[in-house]
Image (cartoon, rainbow, N blue to C red; front, side, top):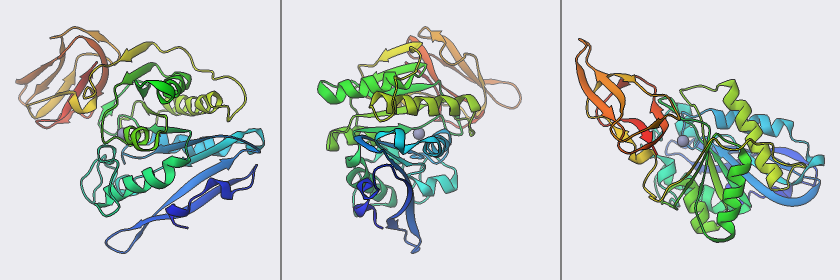
Length: 324
Ligand SMILES: [Zn+2]
């Protein structure tokens, strides 16, 4: 089956299935395929599309989707779950954030192009053929191999129904940090909102190259909470109140605009995640291997530490911390 023909309504009510479908052909002739994990409730209702693996070095989301699908009972569901554990297979195979084929960051090139690079074609296929099935899109990320991020659920600050549903769904997830931002461009979820009017949220958590049991548990519980919020699963969301609630006014204030280093060397971080810092507070030092401090990195504004570099060999220009 081609992704153009993907239709969860092909399942009978109360059916669960793993559907393989073809997305595109690589220059080598190899096929790039997805397996969609679909559970169609016995009763009609809303549809949630849950994706992960936009970045190939983030593993909490893929495992969450496998585990949530495993435990869903369609007889108890009113609506449909569609999960795709890894939407960027080339990056997953390489274990890297960008695609090893074209070097592109899939989360910056939406809406993509049908005749573009491999990453642009993946973006286009997701946007045109998968996201329109969704009443809500949940996009799981994490700190990847190099970063550490607190359990966060993010959404866009928008007027109207899309904004209301996105914010309520993000709150229902039950993360430590609830982060609303103005609509930006090129992101998976920004273009789902802009082009398909699909309320969309994303998550972040530790990363650091693995899957911590507590993170997996929080992602599974959060995904089920969002399904409860949508009425797909019975019961009320069981998320706790967020510790930190942020509403940014600058659409460019995200991990792309975090504090970068200018030196290359060995990193020591001096703060913990979620710490409140003032502008100018010392966040990290970079040393050379004879012990000289090459650079001191300070908070660029007052706020909360929402991301920290963990991989301690750093190169000039790399991201060290996000204070928001
Ligand atoms: Zn990511």
